[in-house]
Length: 461
Image (tube, rainbow, N blue to C red; front, side):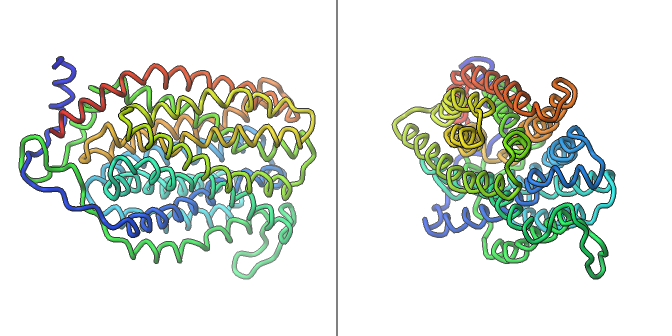
């Protein structure tokens, strides 16, 4: 065993053999838990993504630029989402994950309503910060919880289904937002009791907070699952791992953890940038209406996103069952490479119809990553630090992807091409660069990932 392997094994002091693992819950109950968490994740993306469909009326009513809108969609949300995720990931390793998610969901729904009440750019920023802090409670807890419900050979499919909330929520945001604009014209003022005059786009944010009540009630029907892999390799009872020991373990495996985090973050940079600006691309470049863009893009996300996620998870689980220890990370690499011919074509097509046809396979392939990315992380981290590892992964992923992706695209349009009608060139240049970086990092990380899998097996004993 090399010195680095020894460091990795000693970085987290595991308890000893002795306790038998409890049996996994029934298949029905485990999938029920995933579906409840999926509903909550979906709801979080409604709050997060609805803004992308309302760029024009928000700019007009608030006097904002593309850079300002990119900041609202990106960094105003992502900076505090990522920062808050670190202590919340630490809490996910120490307290009831179900309770943590419940508190966070209520908080982000209140913040979303506050965005609809905002009357200045500063107030909109504050509301987006609140949405980010609340939503930071969800995924570190959900990843850790789901990993305790399923054996490894089924984890890829389970986390892929949960991750479908990215696309179901983003898709519903476009579809619901598009339909609501037919009832409440985004740029028109409406008079309401208590809150007074509000633009139609603000009313949309009131409606999307409504699912919080039934989802919270469903969440309370779940039981906190037993934490697995806590009694191995030389101690007795399960332990809580100090933050310093977590970082030592992460650093000892940095060849895998860093290429994993930054590789998938580059894909996230492209994905969130496209998600934030593609509706506006179709509106500006091809003359689509918000309802048309919302319906077509939303339904595509809702149908192809889950199919892509579950397909990739199934492929990864199939390869894992046949001994490919790097299967989940490898599928992420395949998705980054296969995207190129279709992703490049989207902004270059002469008509909206052709651009949309090219977008369908590009979107399907980009969806492959978001189930296998968290699943692959769970496979190289001891249970005691999965919440913290997920939080650090999400910190890197979302600070780069969600924080910078939408904002950089807005800046490139305003400052490089200096014409809002050149948005297609911004989409092309930014997404291609991001996929080149992602493919290189994920490819470089494969041998390191295989080594990290072996180190965890040795640690577990």
